[in-house]
Image 1 (tube, rainbow, N blue to C red):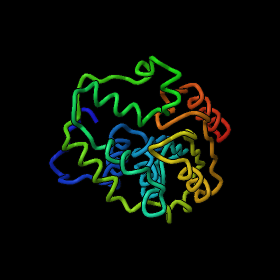
Image 2 (tube, rainbow, N blue to C red):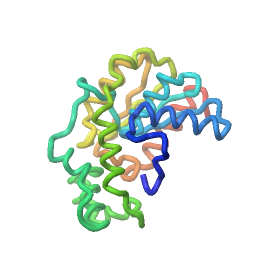
Image 3 (cartoon, rainbow, N blue to C red):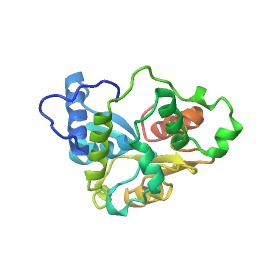
Length: 213
């Protein structure tokens, strides 16, 4: 999130708004169509983008995400509380978030696990975190709409993800016609930090076989 400005038009944020903003950004940059990868909340946005602006999405990669709403499988209350906890120093926030991104077993095996996670020099205002969290919680989900997606779709995530639980990956794959499912053993929500090669190779293979190299 960083220090991105909200703009004057939006008093409240929503997943649909973020998707429309993404479509507008593509127009501004001159991109008529693109392959889209959405991670976590970005996966919600990617789903709304492909559903509301299907002509803009060539290939779809949904990484560590769910279709939201009542059918999604949510983590426990302790995990949900940590997501919105912005108290403490940057290091304390970083350490708390790391335990949501990485499995505890992996952290024990990798003493320098903090090196796998980029450290920012700027903090996100609590109001921005709250605004994004409200957008997530107010999203009605897309579980009953994603069966209309016709773009080639890859669903990928870690089998040890404690933030977006793996049953969500299966649900997405069951609902989106012809979609792929790849689950990485020992990986958590931060799969891209733990096993960047596995993630990138999976995505590149999918794009290659689906007609984009």
